[in-house]
Image 1: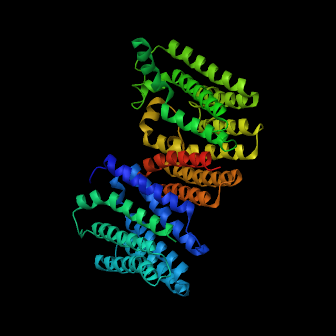
Image 2: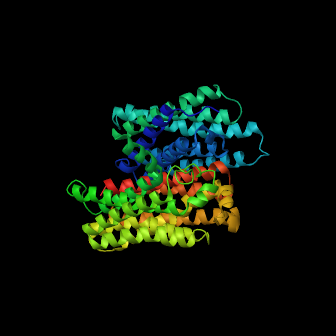
Image 3: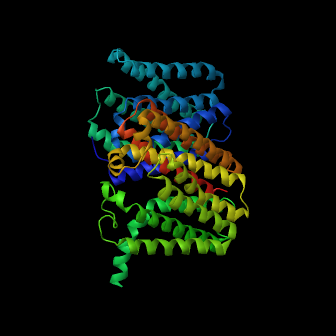
Length: 203
Length: 286
């Protein structure tokens, strides 16, 4: 596995600091559920960044990586739905919980066919990623939110790309080579965190 | 000049600079959580200076006393004392002078502050290292109590008396110590066995040790949050503290449920980072 460079560590540290900043400042006007969900999402990003710095890319070999990397888009999308489309909160909440449990089950049960595990992952990740990507853009286009809020959507697109790259790598069907994925991962995480922080700052 | 440089190069490893720095930071956090460091910059510098000397002094005395077991452990046998680069007599004199300077300075600042600093040194050198370390794995409790003294000293100097937040912070460090030390003693178990130092893994096995690590991590994290709330951290910073604490809890639980060398050492490093982050938050956000 690729050795982590100093630049990788610096990029991950800045990512962690951005996530920590977002946790501290929160999001203006967010209801309690959204605030919890955002805190979980950025908290996972912060702790994951710190663990990558401490333990190197070797930590990605853990079977928990796919599960943990699903928490970020699921909780972030749940927070967005609860804040900006509250009428769908219950429905989306049920999807998020069931989707998460399905991923945990398919990842931790060795008898699950690989095809099923990948399909569940792609559906759950895909829907959560689309919510994060589309909802801010729709809100900005409708004039409900300022244009800068679309950056949250950009962050959503980046998290989708990162999540899928990692998920398929872990599933043994990498879209890009492992070396390439690990080379771009720290930068991708930083861009994603920066896009989210800038996007939420526009609220 | 060259002689002084050479001596400093020789003495520097005696103070375990990273560990000393972390303890000084906890002391500064204790003080700065009560007083503005800019308005009280002279006292802040004095806290840093006195704690640096007292902690360094006690570490040098520990090194002097433990030179025989250090010589038996691969990890420590290249230190200046077991390797013969430095004479035990010189190390003892240096340790006594540096300790006396640190405690003396602390006493001149405030007698209660000085007393707490002295208690830390006494618990560390006499109770932990000389009396208990080679007898029982439970010696780490006393190591933990001495580790909590700098933050208690800082709070005591800032408030003028020993109060509950200082005690809770010291307890948080006491319960954080097992996460730090026990993960370390698991990683270097052969070394400790070779030196005949009783540790939790050797006395009670890995399962019990991992459970203690997980349990003490839970208590340390909760205590840290209680102290942060008492200090008056805003909701946003409390959220951040809770996230960092949750990270340590999950790592400790993961390590207890599915132990591995990597996870164990990851927990060890995260625990240090956690303490540094928690103390930094308390320093700069009040």
